[in-house]
Image: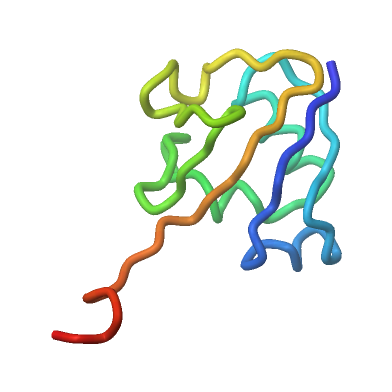
Length: 97
């Protein structure tokens, strides 16, 4: 089952600049394992040593955050779009503090 993973700019060096990658998988975990197999380096960027998702990484299936679904075991359908979105931290909007 083929699906698309959207790669954030900060990780595109791992995919030779590609903004999307096609992988197989029936769950987010399988898709990420196949992404790692095809483009080594993603696991250490996305997952903790115990295999859990890093706090500063958000993953969405379509528009749904997997943290509010079944986590890495969230099922994916053929043609799904999985987006890796690094968390953004910052100060006051507009720079006024």
